[in-house]
Image (cartoon, rainbow over all chains, first blue to last red; front, side, top):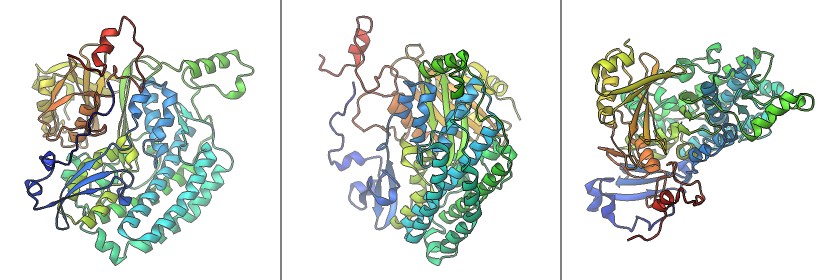
Length: 413
Length: 170
């Protein structure tokens, strides 16, 4: 029942009917293929462009090149074993994906998470946000032609990945958050490493800004490009910096706080013009605000357990296995059969670096989820790309793809 | 601020099938043919103002009947609250009106559900496959679609598997 039949595309222009305008069919405009291996499509995105000279008339995104059936695979695995797959969706935001999935499981079970774990989750997701914005800034600037920023951004990203390696043993695919808390407590080296990062990073943000913010070439390439009105942004489902660039103050961390975000002070930067430049300013400011949250979380990090003590859902500490029969039974049950959440369905949203990351989880009472669905910001933002790109030059299209900050692993899952 | 369940029940007494609450999330089950009007009512009524469609997701409850469900996660930026509308669809070839005219954000989500579950959205502007290749056969997120291997054939499930086997038939 599976398998590819004959490829549909046979080079017949009539098949483009409905996708491109009539002018393309009689040869007035050009239909051009961009990607999927184009360096500025941030992964494997293919665009079918209809061009009138250098102006984009229509843009038809084609995705699915990174589709790995994560949602289908999760239905065949126990809850805890799927966390590794969430890392691989939005590979620039692994901690945020872990968080969305763990929060959904915790909500469906009604599981408690100790304050220390909540604070560490906030701290690490904010570091991940900085990490993701650094990659975004570097590649976005590289696309537009400011090459040196890329090198500086990746220099700092390296330090962040070292921190992730300290806590989880992995640089990218961390799988550090688990239902009920964390995989383990943070080691001793963690705090000095983060303090070191906090001490020098603000000056580095100044450096990026000095290279770009007042640079006339940068202004030329970003101001007044990729305009998105507030009304359209809401209608098209845009979230995160893309929505806030149009002046709408909606940040899930403020509106629907999760994992004790309500304990932290931070500002939500807003744009005025809804163009590429405003969204650039917002993301740079978000890095500063994230650093503020990291600082607060580190200063007020409470002592205590790093994961819940509910043994029906959370494995006991390794040290107890040799002395406690109960612990051994729980360990065995959790790693062979898994846990059984009550029947029900929940939808949990978190603010990923790109926007609203939602996890829709349905449990039928068995150890495997009946259905897991991820509402990913890249997917929804890509659907808004035709609207954003219409009428701009093909050279600006590269900046517009960069400004919605897509990760194709996030879009295709 | 209106109570969504009460407001919808008084506006659409015939379309409301059931409501329940779990972990503070309200789910309203709506008749499939009324989903577009219910969405528009939720978006435009003063006091409800669910102006943002977060997500549309499909579910396959196989072998239960009605088999398919589609969940709409609405959010109101004005009142800072959420609502889930759910539609149940019987049969193996379900059809549902598209809500893209009310919420343009549903465009690709509906394409995804069409691609992965085979739910046809009538009135959708561009209903093509989105994640799987254009010529793909079958809908991978259906529960009777195997996960990369052939399902073992027994006498009790022979008819079900035979129905989907790709070989020449008369």
